[in-house]
Amino acid sequence: MSALDAGWISSEGPAVRQFEREWASYCGMRHGVAVANGTVALELALACAGLEKGDEVILPSFTIISCVLAVVEAGAVPVLVDADPETWCMDVDQVAARVGPRARAVMPVHIYGHPVDMDPLLALAARHGLHVIEDAAEAHGAEYKGRRCGGFGTMSCFSFYANKIVTTGEGGMVLTNDDATAARLRSGRNLAFGEPRFVHRELGHNYRLTNLQAAIGVAQVADVDDRVARKRAMAAYYGERLSRIGCLQLPVERPWAKNVYWMYGVVLRDDAPLDRDAFAARLRGRGVETRPFFVGMHEQPVLRAMGLFAGERYPVTDRIARRGLYLPSGLALTREQQDRVCAAVAEVLR
Ligand SMILES: *Cc1c(COP(=O)(O)O)cnc(C)c1O
Picture 1 (cartoon, protein in one colour):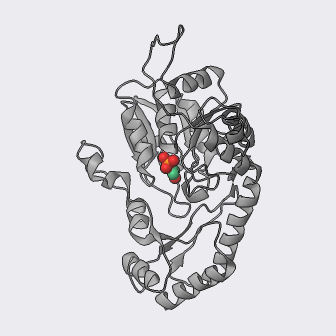
Picture 2: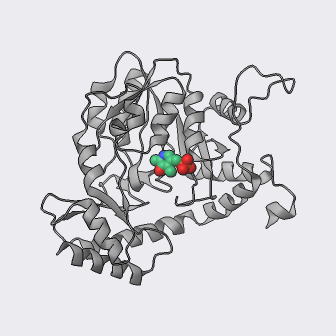
């Protein structure tokens, strides 16, 4: 492996820069700043968005805690919108009503590989002067109207965690088209070393990615399209076999979307003969591992204890959080394994 042979194990090696360049270019952005994971990518992006204490960031209730964490760490206030019942992404129609005088940013999250409906969101953000901080951690290679996710935001954030489509084990990146923002991101990731060195005008973090991980990333970028094609083929195969099961809601792909089906999610409809946890347990009994959907941010005890989201209701999120799970979706999954999963699902739901 050339990164090892060259002795470049630290975060200043050429593979980091190559990974940044290639991923930014794949997503149609000018700058990439590689970081240690997707959570700190979001934290760094929000730290560089110029937010002041009490400013508001609008984001989906149905997402991972990393999104809210980044908002709170930046001293800002998370403001939620419910999910679309079919794409499971933020319901863009609900955003306008949540834009108050303190709103400064909106954070679309492309859930399970399906893009957010970006055009109305970008128009709204432009109208109100909001930053758009994309979380494309689950949408490597996904497209909105022919343009790749991660290419729309003021900044866009990626995770390269082990279960993501492109992975470096642990890893992340922030992309931007803005030169000054890129410089701030680079400084913030590396302890905000100033000039002269060891004189600091801001507090940064150590969010660096190692050259070793970046070398793995470079190799993965080279076959991202193949990985995405395999995810889509896997989803098509599941879709063919599961569409006959009436009580199961399957993932959708809007006409303007290219879904990469990072995870193949299913939601039990009201006429399903059992609840989600029983469904998962019965599948496990047949050797099929599943994972439940996210639990809404408004239901998180730690956030409620901070006084957030009191009395707020997000019924679509509640419904899919309770009735959704994802089926085995790893790239190593074979057709035979998918057949076994589908047979088990059909048996349990009969
Ligand atoms: C995985 C993920 C993250 C966090 O990435 P890590 O690398 O695990 O910190 C953030 N947002 C979304 C939508 C994710 O799926």
